[in-house]
Image 1 (spheres, helix red, strand yellow):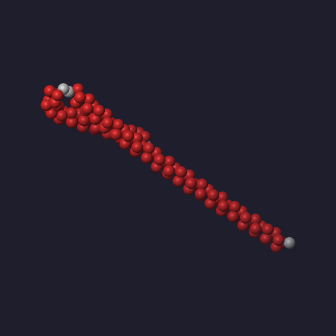
Image 2 (cartoon, helix red, strand yellow):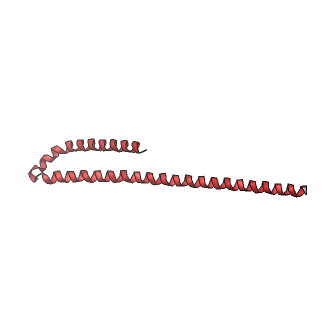
Image 3 (cartoon, helix red, strand yellow):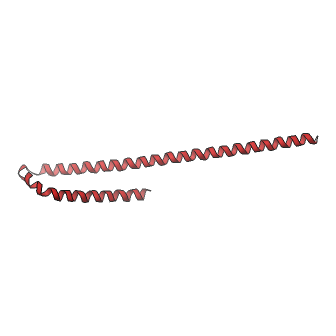
Length: 113
């Protein structure tokens, strides 16, 4: 009789250990999947940020080109020679604009993180 009780207790211990091991593995798998999901979400967010910056830069380039075209179209043919004098000034303003835009982008990127 005592042998049967011991056998039953041993079986219960083994069953409990197996249950605990299964729960531990399940928890580890769940944590691993959550980590993978977070990593994928972070990668997706980074890709979206990169694309936003790329689109913004492209938009700014197009805006700048449109401004140049507008200025050139408003300038009459007789004044085209005078545009050569304006070009260095235009380039300096253009550099200032780009520096300011880059500074704004850096500020946006640091505030988003």
